[in-house]
Length: 262
Image (cartoon, rainbow, N blue to C red):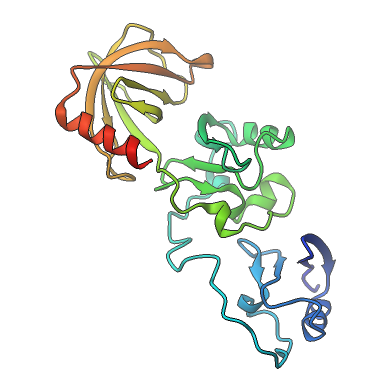
């Protein structure tokens, strides 16, 4: 059975159609080399000029030089698959804001089941950033190959401006609780020299706990350690607010650098 193809024309998604229809439209110049097409198996929408599956003869016309939407190093990050996560485990953080043209903020962690509900409620979309363990940085949800399988819809067209390569990286912290051998992982947000909030799955501590924190160095150059006091538990035990105590000069310098550059 032939694959069903989809294409974007004048900003509207069209299809499904047979590959011959796409090839004919290219030949007639109804679709241009920079127009997007998609079929099952593609990780994301492709420009026609980058799609080796299309065999239609190229029209003999002068084509102005174009700049690629995706840098060569794009897609070289971790091959983490959302489908490999337990649907019930809260393991995915989201970054809301850039997908709506406003200031960004991080939330979570959420399970895949919760993400699907957020998607149905239009609280997240294909341009929302997500992050989970094993990744080096946040990634646009629509860039995951399993997007269609999870959300039962085609992924949106993702332009380079949607990816925003200058995104600030997440602070993935390993939290060492004093007098306790348990080690937790979480995403740090609202970082300042005074303290931060930490998002994590089911924090079992309480306000007033004294803890030490080690910001994980694997996915960011802003590595520091600090100690302090838990001042507030976030709703649903999804994390806590943390006030630094006796912050070292090295840690203070690192945080100030992060705040300035991000």
